[in-house]
Image (tube, rainbow, N blue to C red; front, side):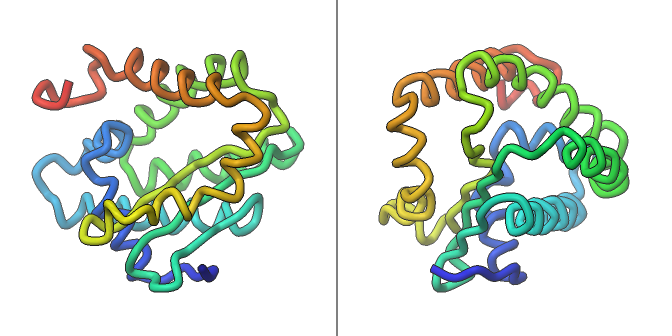
Length: 182
């Protein structure tokens, strides 16, 4: 595995995650314009990968067209506040007003649930995606393995249950998703 922010990696992430409810919600401003939606998601992933490189760990498969994982470390509040303002402006520019609003509402919904079940010093898996043609070979698991082993030692069931239940609770019947996806 190597570290690299390449267009091939961005394409792999877009291809693998574009139908995930979170990414559907944050890219809803593009309606039926799939080209613009993919471009916006690629910019979002590029920013997230750069953030992982600065504040955590970016793991890109040896063949960058296969996929990547982005881990973030907790940051001091002064760093988080400064980055948060810049990120908010970026999200509005890239995702549009509704997409940025959905992003902030989802994060506001998930944050207290995460804080209740996960130690604040834990790494956070921000993104993991494997190109559809490469899925089913254990690549995703290998992308996250080094960090996930450490996290699972800390709270093996809490992490899985928290993420699954919070995502279901948030997306069930919510107004973030088109009705055919709920």
